Length: 209
Image 1 (spheres, rainbow, N blue to C red):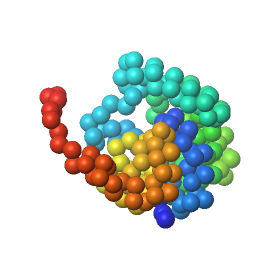
Image 2: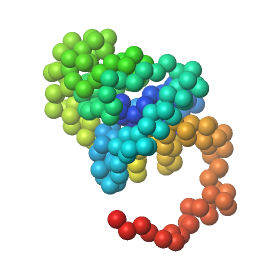
Image 3: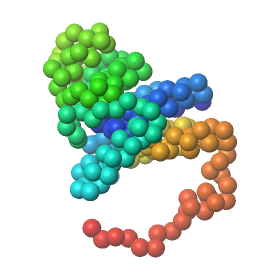
Image 4: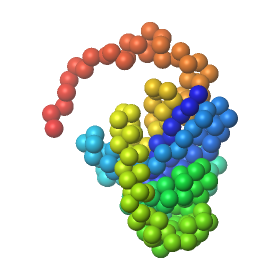
């Protein structure tokens, strides 16, 4: 089976899910796809959790708690949310390999470094064999590839990161990791009467914006 993992380096939940996704490669042929989370939010008319007072503070606590609970080393970058375009483009310039994905996530979320520009990404760029990070992230082909990834994610129905697409099914968030395992164990999981009912559940009220 093939799958696609859509992520943005801005998301700590993507960092937390990364080890689980890497483990899933024993069962799935997974392609990592860096996308722009901000563009996804704009497309769906949403705010990110870090843009909502109260939710921001809870989300950061939840991230730290999940990391502690799972035994994942985590240190927040100097500021959050941050502009992740440079990190996303560096990943693509490095071939969007799993090594590149892991190295950049570790730079940002394990070691707590910044990643908003070429200077902040210079060390991890050298690790990935890219000496001139500024030129790499300014390359038009790299920028175009990131836009294409994001457009393809939106066309697939992606509404958040991280999202793992397995066939036609979307699994959103680190919290959904056990659900992915259950689906792989039983591909007919969502065909039961209960799941079919909620798929067609009518809306009783719509909130006026």
